[in-house]
Amino acid sequence: MRHKFAVIGLGIFGNSIATTLAERGAEVIAIDNDEDHVEAIKDQVAYAVALDATDIRSLEAQNIQDMDAVIVAIGEDFEALLITTANLQELNVKRVITRASNKQQRRILEKMGVQEILSPEGEVGKTVAERLLQPSIRTFLPLPDNYEIVEINAPRNIANRSVAKISLREKYNLNLITIKRFFEEIQDGKPTQVEHIIGVPKADTIIYPSDILLLIGKKQDVKRFIDINR
Image (cartoon, rainbow, N blue to C red; front, top):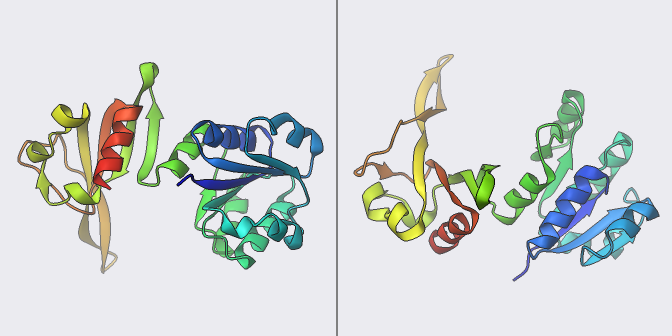
């Protein structure tokens, strides 16, 4: 089944997210109140429409509530971004991801209960798209020749198995750089989960369900590893 996404706000950042998602096979609705922006992207996505996203009825008419996720990438008009985000929350959109241009905007969005907030200064549209298509990928760094370094949540099917038994290199052409693991520590008198690097994994290192794996390999091999073991 194809992923279905909507991207609202088609500046450089939103355009990059929308076109990358479409290139990767997702069904994308691209939305902006500027007809020129819509015209520029219409041939690259499933559907592009000019509308005012602060009008909840206009959003509902596009069946926005049926999307797997909606990315609010409005850049210059923060009031419009807030109203649009509130509209999506009211329509019970499964996953709302909203842009914040500074710390103050991020704080306001957090007060609204937005769980996923993007900072364009630290995010690239293609990186955001990759995370949407592969939710288990936490972060990734593209490298030349189609290689990448990725941080992923340990897939369910490899949990409680040793590094040797998973055969990452032999079966998937991947190398495990290290593992991030959470340990309970007392901080300010309270038990707190603290993330630590466990160093270079050995063949007998057991991978726990809550571990985060740092891998290097080709993009298609990372995807195959995640798909097989999810």
